[in-house]
Image 1 (cartoon, rainbow, N blue to C red):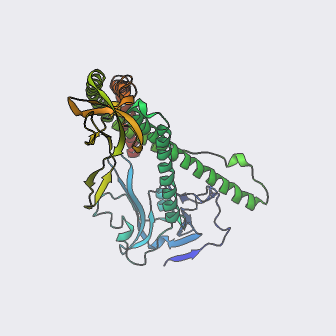
Image 2 (cartoon, helix red, strand yellow):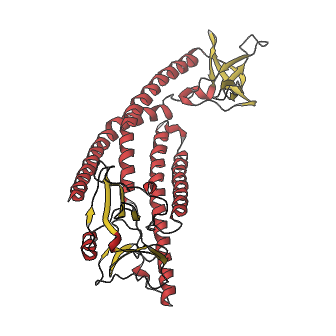
Image 3 (cartoon, rainbow, N blue to C red):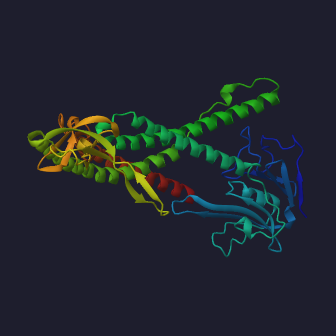
Length: 417
């Protein structure tokens, strides 16, 4: 017969009694003060199971036929699923608890003279490996504190917001750079966004750790009736493994990104640079100057919903010499990747080729070198990405993967032991 009831406050001591055989879960959740309320104890001829919320479930040892400790490991030796079940003589479960349990089960079995302790691995032998497989009414030990799911969802939402905020902050910093440096600004923006993501994750865990430490200190102070020593509760924990995994993924993604981005951005910039240089040369040698304006010549596209979208496009509006009644509208060539600002009320000087009036530009666009700014920045950035950044990134990725495999191998060997 089972006895399930709540233990009055103060009866479940956080200090283990060395005279009573006790077993704890391997990955148990702690209370606010770091105590482990979840445990199994041999109390006389009874196996007493304690859980969160002052839960106590007493099972007479004479009714237990088998203790079933089920653990399923993943390909790297990590625990993928685990549970503990007390099986009665009729084959029905008397108690079920989540998670793997540590040493002490065999000692409990011998102390209470329970017939066997099994470690099933297959589906046929592990009859009650999950909570869904339990018959209705089976007592379940609360191995997690109340509200853990709500707190987990809230923490995930906050972490996601901080991560997005870090990424946006990184992108915002890159926008402070001059656009004249070319596509390298986009690459810097990506790197800063990744750094912002890592910083957001680190800051989230640091703030969570500080809040948890403060809560533990407050509860301890209230229990003691005065301020508790802060140094006993202060510890800032950050997710080294999570950050390390993200860094490895980002390094792996950056290798093909730079390998593709570098040659493409450099090649496109060289192609456009030579085209712009030829246009500037022709306009300087044969160009004719006339008054004109920069107007908007929009073009339209259709989005995925079938709606038409309008996009601005700068165009030069002018009348060729001797053709005052003919107003030409020519696309702005965007020399050096920069088009002239659209302002139909601000007159500009347009230089066009009389042999081909479609070749035209604002006079200021053909002043100076076409390689100044974005084009040369893209060429240099592409070369730097491939020749300077690519080799160390490949070497860093190899080191991180090798270290991760060695660590996984050690953990798998330790788990088998």
